[in-house]
Amino acid sequence: MSDGSSFYITTPIFYVNDVPHIGHAYTEVAADVLARWHRQSGEDAWLLTGTDEHGQKILRTATANGVTPKEWADRLVETAWKPLLKTVDIRNDDFIRTTDVRHEVNAQKFLQHLYDSGHIYTGEYEGFYCVGCEEYKQPSDLIDGVGEYAGQQVCAIHSIPCELLHEKNYFFRMSTFADHLLALYEENPNFVQPASARNEVISFVKQGLSDLSISRSSFDWGIKVPWDDSHVVYVWFDALLNYITAAGYGHDDEKFSRLWPATHVVGKDILRFHAVIWPAMLLAAGIEVPRQVFGHGWLLVGGEKMSKSKLTGIAPNQITDTFGSDAFRYYFMRAISFGQDGSFSWEDLSARYQSELANGFGNLASRVIAMVVRYCDGEIPVAGDFSEADELIRGTEKRVTDAATLAIGHLAIHDAIAAMWELVDELNGYITAQEPWSLAKDPADRDRLEAVLVTAVRGLGTLAVLLSPVVPQATAKLWTALGGIGLVTDQRIDRAWEWTGGPRVSPLEALFPRIEATVG
Ligand code: ME8
Image (spheres, rainbow, N blue to C red):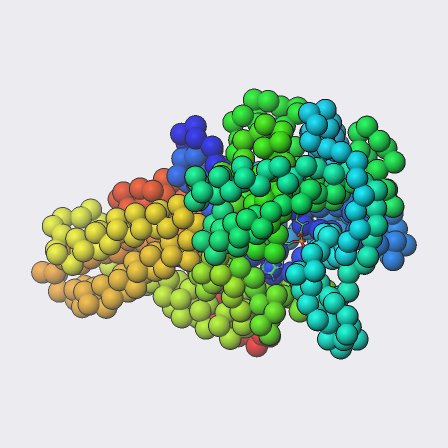
């Protein structure tokens, strides 16, 4: 059902030094919802995710565990990072590892090209390096340490001191791209979003850019610099290239021209890498810059970014084992404005599960289907005359479809879901007001009963199509129960309201069953 236009979307590739927590799952789900939406809009959507496996951080973890870095990476990819995708129901089209040959070889081609065209030189650098961030820090990036690090300057993200490094390295002439980047942000205001992220990036670049050290010679866990194998490529330079090596750069021109440029969804912690370094690298290589870089907010615990290093990470399956993957996806996409920070709480999750998913949406579906079974032997009636109230529901279906489509265009996933929930709420109010159970008592009200039921069934069909990217499992069950033809994922989402109903309904199990166990 592709209309031929391409929507290539990526997540960051995650470090394999540790297992995933719900912050990583959050990014995966957001990118997946967007990819599913665009797929259902008829575009050739392609979702890439993967793992970042080189660098000092991984090397140190592997060494501490008595294995080689490659063995460590293989273990974590197979036991933790690929399983994460199943846990939260990600439908990715590719999974790239920076140790894949397709990545290493083509990243080297990119580097050689930059070297040959004069963008790389040899230099010396001394500075404070944070291994947690895999980044040299400026004095302004450091804060006063507390506890065991009181009296020292520490990384603002990892709260640990940086290491003073002095190296003779290869450098990328990034400073020469500052004006070009500022023009890019100016000419294309959507390039970096949301607005807060864009402003931060612009003021950073306005201060002037330094050249970037892009190689290391003190350890060898990385991609070899093609013209000097005593150096390995700086892990971020290596990692950013995944977005093009996975898309065919250097080895599949047809695929690359079909997919590129991409929309990058990243956490705001790594915004500068994506909105400054990455486009500068691409400009140097003469490759089109990304379509968009969206920096989402952080999941906070106790007001701080949730992280494994601070022992505040929650494993995604702690949530999905009890609530299921649909509830995970719904909760994080609905409760947090995409682009802003948000705090996770078990109480909020339980409350929203019960009131919005189980009572609001799930019960609506069960009640409507049960009434079609009871009053019409399961046959979806053919509509006769519609009343004003029925027409209002049809109007809402179209309105929320358009509103959700518009919101997704701005990556405002929370607004899209809020729009869909107007239909959930209106349908619930409509059923209460129309009282089909009363209409069923008098044969004289038969036409009215049928019009109400068919209106409710159509409304549910529209919801199934619209909500499919967010809660794929529940909507697939609902679609089948409504007698929908084909897969719900094959229905055009931008015309969700056009569905007019199948021949018969079939029984529907509770979409969001009551949760008895205490959690937390
Ligand atoms: O930075 N809240 O990998 P990483 C929301 N390998 N999102 C969070 C989060 C939180 N508390 N914690 C992590 C790297 N994330 C590099 C990326 S890309 C070329 C290389 C998510 O494993 C968020 O997407 O540290 C963040 O940007 C990412 O995990 C960092 O993952």
